[in-house]
Amino acid sequence: MKVTQEAEKEVQSKTKTKKVLSILFKVLCAIIIAILLFVAIVYTVNKISSYSEQKRMEPYGQRVSVDGKQMNVTIQGKGGETVVILPGFGTAAPVLDFKPLISELSPYYKVVVVEPFGYGLSDQTEKERSTANIVSEIHEALQSLHIDRYILMGHSISGIYSLDYVNKYENEVRAFVGLDSSVPALSEQKVDSSDTQPIKWFRNLGFARVQLKLSADPYDGLPYDEETKEQLNIMIRKNMYNTTQLNEAESMYSNFKAAERLTFPPNLPVLFFVQANHPGTDQWIPEHEKLVKDSVHGEMVLLEANHYLYRSHSKEIAEKFMSFMGGIQ
Image (cartoon, rainbow, N blue to C red; front, side, top):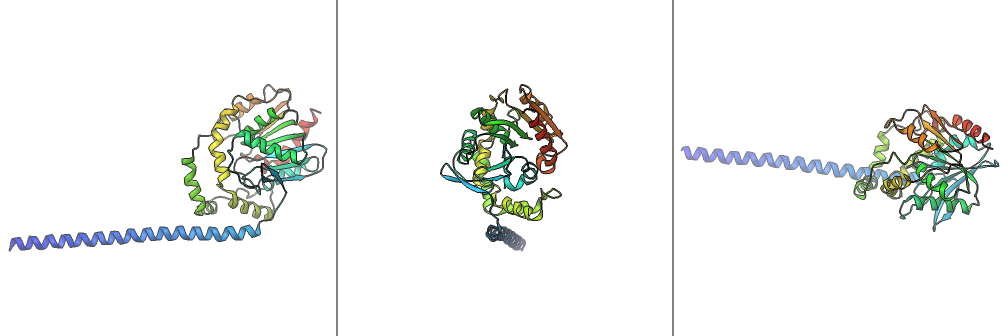
């Protein structure tokens, strides 16, 4: 009798275990199905939204042939001197992003904004995003437009590219203006293809759109009209984490290292606009001072602003820039 009771208990225990495992399996299947359904919804919404946004995208600028591809460039203003503006890393639509600064400069200068490959309305490219290639492509674009004497103005990572540029084309560049431009000594972290591959999946599945939806509007409260902000948001969704920009991220560390041996030509006028309180390092101002200390005409202006200081302080930048240029005539 005792053996029979123990056997019954064992059977009941096994039955209970099977039920628990069955429930856990069903729950796990439900979770997997829910995740797959969520991914499918995100993917589908992104595809539909991207198609809709593509039709609402308003073209701007002109396209020039560079290395067999098309690069987008805008020219505004009819001043006697030319200012060429280069964007920081990841700027989705440089022409639209620099709009407040362009508005301040274009009454007095011919303002040229170059959208490198992977930016704005320019094509993407599989060519290595080395400083040498990027500089060569920008120069080719300017040459095709017969622009051969100009002031170079660069934001963020363009400060690294510009160091190479002004040394290669010293006879063309009249002055350099850094808009919180990067400095070689404060390098970005090394990024490998193994780091960017998950980001490509993240983008291709549509989760970049979700990320943007949950993020604050970077143009809120700034001097951009609603139409421009709408186009900027469309362009951000178009270009965020695109392959060309991810390739540029992979080349960034080596580009910084290569720039460590470069300095600005002593006779080249250099004007830095720098954020007064960098959130990540206390060496931001000292390293800019080192770069400009040997320039015959070198100056640094501190602004109470974030990294995108030209969005919020375009008027101050334009006024100081024109004063600086007037002093070296």
